[in-house]
Length: 314
Image 1 (cartoon, rainbow, N blue to C red):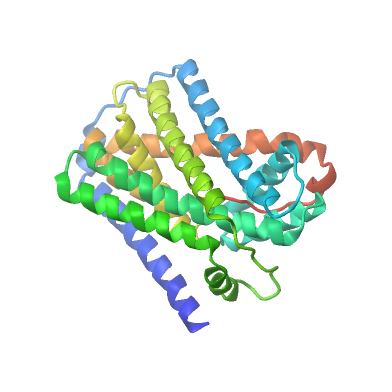
Image 2: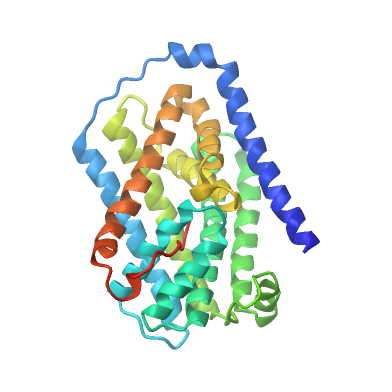
């Protein structure tokens, strides 16, 4: 219990440090921020393509979650899986990441899926999201920021290997037992997942991060064509900032820490005002996708959507 309290306190401190650095950076460069002129030119086609790219990433993640559930000897078609995942996903706007897993379990059970399978799939997907994000940042950061050279590339490769090794441990019963002991009492037992499925899920999550980076480039083209980040830079910035949001358990949907990291990383290459603008636009885009995709299921209120539940990914 004491160890868990220390871990939560560490997360809060790290998140506050990131926010503090962003505020300090903005304060010190306030004159530069006001002097910069960013011309906003709305291009609906690019915005639509950005939105559809995020939707495609969501579809890949839903299918990855569904396959993890099916691997636990359950039956679940894509549409019911999408209903569970999307409606549950709205819970990420509540503080605390445990709601995401608990909500997915409740909704899945109402759809005829066992809680054990739903909890296992949700936990594994969270781990795969983080592990794949580390790999993507490790591979894209040296080229995206044009610094670090061979040393940073080597360090990134080591991080990537460590991340792959870490997620494959999800196949080990002892590791899952260790995770189980740190979950709230009364949660269903977590089952091991085959290494092949773990690595496949890792690849799907990595592709999803890349899609988010591409969507950020398209978003910039649709709003600020004079301040468009390169693809590798956009992928690094989006993924790294999202990972910070994942770690910040107390922040609903990572709000605050994610934007702060986004601004810190992007203000150098693009300028302070474009970085702030893109951070806000990216948040709005993802929130719109969350609402647009979940709304039809909420309106229908059919089957397993009779009660509000919480998300599967921050």
